[in-house]
Every structure is written in C-alpha cells, then in structure tokens.
Length: 69
Image (cartoon, rainbow, N blue to C red; front, side):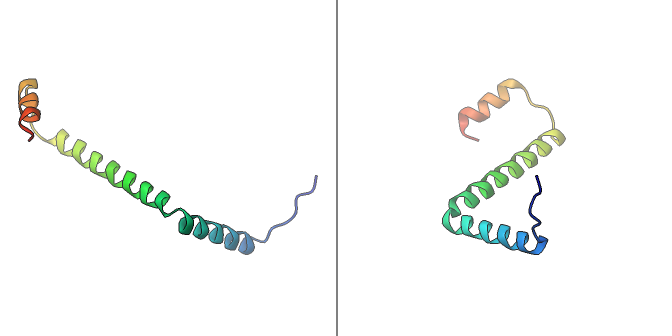
C-alpha cells in the first residue's frame, strides 16, 4: 500500500489550525491543564522544602492540622 506524501509545511499548518480550533472551542481544557501543572509545581516545591526542613513528631503534625496551621 502506497501512502500519500504530505508536505511537512501543509501538515504543520493543519495541526496548528486544529489545535487553535480546539483551544478556542474548549478553552476549559487548557485551563484545566494549566491548573494541574501549577498544582504539580507547588507539590514539588513543598516536597523539596520538606526534605530540607527539620523532622517533627507525629503529634506535632496532628496538632498543626487540628489548629488549621
């Protein structure tokens, strides 16, 4: 089976057009992806901060949670 040849420039233009159309019609998808990325970055930073901070006891953790800290 012979596949038709697609010019790289034409393919790039088609993909770009399709992506723009999806983002215009479903901007919520982009918003959700960006929110997810921001949450992931915040989680990584929290983990890194936790790794460099001192250890605390289990009781201290639960006290902080109970006090809303």
